[in-house]
Image 1: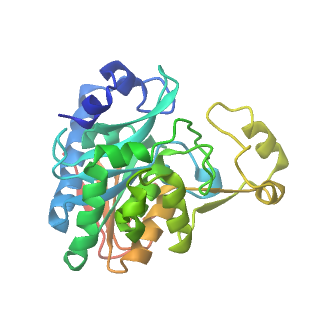
Image 2: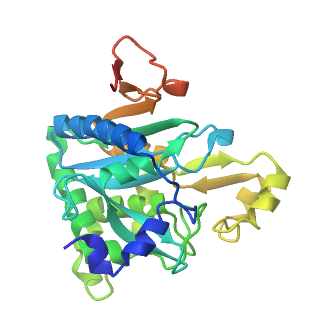
Length: 303
Protein backbone atom coordinates (compact mmCIF):
# COMPACT_ATOMS: atom_id res chain seq x y z
CA UNK A 1 0.00 0.00 0.00
CA UNK A 2 1.37 3.42 -0.91
CA UNK A 3 2.39 5.69 1.95
CA UNK A 4 -0.15 8.30 0.79
CA UNK A 5 -2.84 5.70 1.11
CA UNK A 6 -1.75 4.86 4.64
CA UNK A 7 -2.07 8.51 5.60
CA UNK A 8 -5.39 9.03 3.79
CA UNK A 9 -4.24 11.77 1.43
CA UNK A 10 -6.69 12.20 -1.50
CA UNK A 11 -5.17 12.09 -4.95
CA UNK A 12 -6.54 15.55 -5.80
CA UNK A 13 -4.83 17.06 -2.77
CA UNK A 14 -1.56 15.37 -3.75
CA UNK A 15 -1.71 16.96 -7.17
CA UNK A 16 -2.28 20.43 -5.74
CA UNK A 17 0.50 20.05 -3.22
CA UNK A 18 3.28 19.54 -5.75
CA UNK A 19 4.16 23.20 -5.16
CA UNK A 20 3.55 25.39 -2.14
CA UNK A 21 0.02 26.22 -3.24
CA UNK A 22 1.22 26.91 -6.78
CA UNK A 23 -1.15 26.06 -9.58
CA UNK A 24 -0.12 23.01 -11.59
CA UNK A 25 1.24 23.89 -15.00
CA UNK A 26 0.28 22.12 -18.20
CA UNK A 27 3.07 19.94 -19.55
CA UNK A 28 3.36 19.14 -23.23
CA UNK A 29 3.92 15.61 -24.47
CA UNK A 30 7.40 16.63 -25.64
CA UNK A 31 8.31 17.96 -22.18
CA UNK A 32 6.96 14.82 -20.54
CA UNK A 33 9.10 12.70 -22.82
CA UNK A 34 12.15 14.82 -21.99
CA UNK A 35 11.57 14.48 -18.25
CA UNK A 36 11.16 10.71 -18.58
CA UNK A 37 14.49 10.52 -20.41
CA UNK A 38 16.09 12.69 -17.74
CA UNK A 39 14.55 10.52 -15.02
CA UNK A 40 16.11 7.43 -16.64
CA UNK A 41 19.55 9.02 -16.25
CA UNK A 42 18.82 9.85 -12.60
CA UNK A 43 17.73 6.25 -11.98
CA UNK A 44 20.95 5.08 -13.64
CA UNK A 45 22.94 7.04 -11.07
CA UNK A 46 20.83 5.75 -8.19
CA UNK A 47 21.25 2.16 -9.30
CA UNK A 48 24.99 2.59 -9.89
CA UNK A 49 25.44 3.81 -6.30
CA UNK A 50 24.55 0.38 -4.97
CA UNK A 51 22.46 2.03 -2.26
CA UNK A 52 18.77 1.52 -1.57
CA UNK A 53 18.16 4.92 0.00
CA UNK A 54 19.16 8.35 -1.29
CA UNK A 55 18.71 11.97 -0.28
CA UNK A 56 17.43 13.73 -3.40
CA UNK A 57 17.12 17.49 -3.70
CA UNK A 58 15.67 19.67 -6.41
CA UNK A 59 15.13 23.30 -7.21
CA UNK A 60 11.65 24.74 -6.85
CA UNK A 61 11.21 27.92 -4.90
CA UNK A 62 13.63 30.47 -6.37
CA UNK A 63 16.27 31.13 -3.71
CA UNK A 64 18.90 32.50 -6.10
CA UNK A 65 18.85 35.92 -4.37
CA UNK A 66 20.38 34.10 -1.38
CA UNK A 67 22.86 32.18 -3.51
CA UNK A 68 20.98 28.91 -3.07
CA UNK A 69 20.06 26.42 -5.80
CA UNK A 70 18.06 23.71 -4.02
CA UNK A 71 14.92 24.27 -1.98
CA UNK A 72 13.22 20.88 -1.49
CA UNK A 73 14.48 17.44 -0.48
CA UNK A 74 13.05 13.99 0.06
CA UNK A 75 14.21 10.41 0.54
CA UNK A 76 14.18 8.19 -2.54
CA UNK A 77 13.68 4.53 -1.68
CA UNK A 78 14.47 1.72 -4.09
CA UNK A 79 11.84 -0.48 -2.43
CA UNK A 80 9.21 2.23 -2.05
CA UNK A 81 5.73 0.61 -2.23
CA UNK A 82 4.65 3.42 -4.58
CA UNK A 83 7.31 2.41 -7.13
CA UNK A 84 11.05 2.00 -7.35
CA UNK A 85 12.89 5.16 -6.25
CA UNK A 86 9.69 7.06 -5.45
CA UNK A 87 10.40 9.95 -3.09
CA UNK A 88 9.02 10.02 0.45
CA UNK A 89 8.60 13.61 1.55
CA UNK A 90 6.61 16.31 3.31
CA UNK A 91 4.38 18.69 1.34
CA UNK A 92 1.91 21.34 2.36
CA UNK A 93 -1.55 20.29 1.15
CA UNK A 94 -3.37 23.40 -0.01
CA UNK A 95 -6.92 22.02 0.09
CA UNK A 96 -6.51 20.89 3.69
CA UNK A 97 -4.26 23.76 4.85
CA UNK A 98 -1.90 21.33 6.54
CA UNK A 99 1.32 19.40 5.92
CA UNK A 100 1.17 15.77 4.91
CA UNK A 101 3.62 12.97 4.15
CA UNK A 102 3.36 11.00 0.93
CA UNK A 103 5.26 9.31 -1.86
CA UNK A 104 5.82 10.83 -5.28
CA UNK A 105 7.20 9.13 -8.37
CA UNK A 106 10.69 10.27 -9.27
CA UNK A 107 9.62 11.74 -12.63
CA UNK A 108 6.92 13.87 -10.97
CA UNK A 109 9.39 14.94 -8.28
CA UNK A 110 11.79 16.15 -10.97
CA UNK A 111 9.06 17.76 -13.06
CA UNK A 112 8.06 19.94 -10.10
CA UNK A 113 11.60 21.28 -9.88
CA UNK A 114 11.88 23.41 -13.00
CA UNK A 115 13.80 26.61 -12.26
CA UNK A 116 15.02 29.26 -14.72
CA UNK A 117 14.61 26.94 -17.68
CA UNK A 118 16.47 24.00 -16.10
CA UNK A 119 15.76 20.85 -14.15
CA UNK A 120 18.45 20.11 -11.61
CA UNK A 121 18.75 17.38 -9.00
CA UNK A 122 21.34 16.48 -6.40
CA UNK A 123 21.72 12.91 -5.10
CA UNK A 124 23.61 11.89 -1.96
CA UNK A 125 24.09 8.21 -1.14
CA UNK A 126 26.04 6.35 1.51
CA UNK A 127 28.80 3.91 0.45
CA UNK A 128 28.88 0.17 1.07
CA UNK A 129 31.10 0.77 4.11
CA UNK A 130 28.18 2.62 5.74
CA UNK A 131 25.41 0.17 4.92
CA UNK A 132 24.43 -0.15 8.58
CA UNK A 133 23.82 3.61 8.81
CA UNK A 134 21.93 3.54 5.53
CA UNK A 135 19.77 0.64 6.68
CA UNK A 136 18.88 2.52 9.87
CA UNK A 137 17.84 5.56 7.83
CA UNK A 138 15.89 3.41 5.41
CA UNK A 139 14.03 1.62 8.19
CA UNK A 140 13.03 4.85 9.94
CA UNK A 141 11.81 6.50 6.73
CA UNK A 142 9.78 3.39 5.83
CA UNK A 143 8.21 3.24 9.30
CA UNK A 144 4.94 5.20 9.23
CA UNK A 145 4.53 5.61 13.04
CA UNK A 146 8.02 7.11 13.36
CA UNK A 147 7.53 9.37 10.34
CA UNK A 148 4.22 10.64 11.70
CA UNK A 149 5.59 11.16 15.20
CA UNK A 150 8.03 13.67 13.69
CA UNK A 151 5.44 15.50 11.58
CA UNK A 152 4.36 18.89 12.90
CA UNK A 153 0.74 19.95 12.31
CA UNK A 154 1.96 23.49 11.53
CA UNK A 155 3.97 24.28 8.42
CA UNK A 156 6.27 27.18 7.66
CA UNK A 157 8.54 27.29 4.62
CA UNK A 158 11.16 29.18 6.64
CA UNK A 159 10.69 27.31 9.93
CA UNK A 160 13.41 27.84 12.52
CA UNK A 161 15.46 24.66 12.45
CA UNK A 162 15.59 24.31 16.24
CA UNK A 163 12.03 25.34 16.98
CA UNK A 164 8.95 23.23 17.63
CA UNK A 165 6.30 25.73 16.53
CA UNK A 166 6.56 24.97 12.80
CA UNK A 167 8.31 22.60 10.42
CA UNK A 168 9.28 22.69 6.76
CA UNK A 169 9.82 19.81 4.36
CA UNK A 170 13.59 19.67 4.84
CA UNK A 171 13.36 19.87 8.64
CA UNK A 172 11.31 16.68 8.63
CA UNK A 173 14.17 14.96 6.77
CA UNK A 174 16.70 16.25 9.32
CA UNK A 175 14.60 14.90 12.17
CA UNK A 176 14.22 11.54 10.43
CA UNK A 177 18.02 11.36 10.29
CA UNK A 178 18.03 11.94 14.03
CA UNK A 179 15.54 9.11 14.55
CA UNK A 180 17.81 6.86 12.49
CA UNK A 181 21.07 7.58 14.29
CA UNK A 182 20.22 8.88 17.78
CA UNK A 183 21.05 6.03 20.21
CA UNK A 184 18.28 7.22 22.54
CA UNK A 185 15.66 6.22 19.94
CA UNK A 186 15.69 2.69 21.37
CA UNK A 187 15.80 3.70 25.04
CA UNK A 188 12.97 1.88 26.88
CA UNK A 189 11.98 5.04 28.78
CA UNK A 190 10.79 6.54 25.48
CA UNK A 191 8.42 3.68 24.76
CA UNK A 192 5.55 5.33 26.61
CA UNK A 193 5.74 8.71 24.90
CA UNK A 194 7.58 7.84 21.70
CA UNK A 195 10.47 9.55 20.00
CA UNK A 196 9.42 13.12 19.18
CA UNK A 197 10.67 16.32 17.58
CA UNK A 198 12.18 17.59 20.82
CA UNK A 199 14.31 14.45 21.11
CA UNK A 200 15.32 14.71 17.47
CA UNK A 201 16.37 18.35 17.69
CA UNK A 202 18.32 17.76 20.90
CA UNK A 203 20.33 15.08 19.11
CA UNK A 204 20.79 17.19 15.98
CA UNK A 205 22.30 19.97 18.09
CA UNK A 206 24.61 17.56 19.89
CA UNK A 207 25.68 15.99 16.61
CA UNK A 208 26.64 19.36 15.13
CA UNK A 209 23.81 19.80 12.64
CA UNK A 210 24.13 23.29 11.12
CA UNK A 211 21.02 24.67 9.37
CA UNK A 212 21.39 26.98 6.40
CA UNK A 213 22.17 30.51 7.56
CA UNK A 214 20.16 32.82 5.30
CA UNK A 215 21.34 36.41 5.39
CA UNK A 216 18.21 38.38 4.58
CA UNK A 217 20.17 41.62 4.27
CA UNK A 218 17.20 43.97 4.43
CA UNK A 219 14.75 45.05 7.11
CA UNK A 220 12.26 45.54 4.28
CA UNK A 221 12.51 41.91 3.17
CA UNK A 222 12.22 40.72 6.76
CA UNK A 223 9.09 42.84 7.25
CA UNK A 224 7.47 41.80 3.96
CA UNK A 225 8.12 38.16 4.78
CA UNK A 226 5.64 38.37 7.66
CA UNK A 227 2.79 38.90 5.17
CA UNK A 228 3.65 36.14 2.71
CA UNK A 229 1.55 32.96 3.17
CA UNK A 230 3.47 30.02 4.62
CA UNK A 231 6.31 32.24 5.87
CA UNK A 232 6.54 33.00 9.58
CA UNK A 233 8.95 34.97 11.75
CA UNK A 234 7.52 34.39 15.23
CA UNK A 235 9.47 31.17 15.81
CA UNK A 236 12.91 32.65 15.12
CA UNK A 237 15.14 33.92 17.97
CA UNK A 238 15.03 37.69 18.39
CA UNK A 239 18.80 37.92 18.07
CA UNK A 240 18.56 36.29 14.63
CA UNK A 241 15.83 38.67 13.51
CA UNK A 242 17.82 41.68 14.73
CA UNK A 243 20.82 40.32 12.80
CA UNK A 244 18.65 39.85 9.67
CA UNK A 245 19.37 36.14 9.54
CA UNK A 246 17.20 33.04 9.38
CA UNK A 247 18.47 29.58 10.29
CA UNK A 248 16.44 27.17 8.19
CA UNK A 249 16.79 23.56 7.12
CA UNK A 250 17.46 23.47 3.38
CA UNK A 251 18.90 20.71 1.18
CA UNK A 252 22.46 22.05 1.43
CA UNK A 253 22.38 21.68 5.21
CA UNK A 254 21.06 18.12 4.94
CA UNK A 255 23.79 17.17 2.47
CA UNK A 256 26.52 18.70 4.62
CA UNK A 257 25.22 16.83 7.67
CA UNK A 258 25.23 13.53 5.78
CA UNK A 259 28.82 14.13 4.72
CA UNK A 260 29.72 15.06 8.30
CA UNK A 261 28.21 11.84 9.61
CA UNK A 262 29.65 9.70 6.80
CA UNK A 263 32.66 11.43 5.20
CA UNK A 264 32.68 8.88 2.37
CA UNK A 265 29.12 9.84 1.32
CA UNK A 266 28.85 10.25 -2.45
CA UNK A 267 27.21 13.11 -4.29
CA UNK A 268 26.20 13.62 -7.91
CA UNK A 269 24.29 16.46 -9.59
CA UNK A 270 22.38 16.17 -12.86
CA UNK A 271 21.18 19.23 -14.74
CA UNK A 272 18.90 19.33 -17.78
CA UNK A 273 18.81 22.46 -19.90
CA UNK A 274 17.19 22.42 -23.32
CA UNK A 275 18.13 18.87 -24.35
CA UNK A 276 21.56 18.73 -22.75
CA UNK A 277 22.28 16.93 -19.49
CA UNK A 278 25.39 17.55 -17.43
CA UNK A 279 26.38 14.96 -14.80
CA UNK A 280 28.74 16.34 -12.16
CA UNK A 281 30.17 14.13 -9.41
CA UNK A 282 31.63 15.27 -6.12
CA UNK A 283 31.02 17.92 -3.50
CA UNK A 284 32.00 20.97 -5.52
CA UNK A 285 29.01 22.80 -7.02
CA UNK A 286 27.79 22.29 -10.57
CA UNK A 287 28.35 25.28 -12.83
CA UNK A 288 25.67 27.88 -13.38
CA UNK A 289 23.27 27.32 -16.30
CA UNK A 290 24.23 23.63 -16.42
CA UNK A 291 27.78 24.32 -17.46
CA UNK A 292 30.40 21.58 -16.94
CA UNK A 293 33.03 22.63 -14.39
CA UNK A 294 35.74 20.00 -14.88
CA UNK A 295 36.98 17.46 -17.38
CA UNK A 296 35.28 14.58 -15.53
CA UNK A 297 31.80 16.01 -16.03
CA UNK A 298 29.65 13.93 -18.35
CA UNK A 299 27.65 15.75 -21.03
CA UNK A 300 24.80 14.07 -22.87
CA UNK A 301 22.27 15.22 -25.43
CA UNK A 302 18.78 13.77 -25.20
CA UNK A 303 17.76 13.15 -28.82
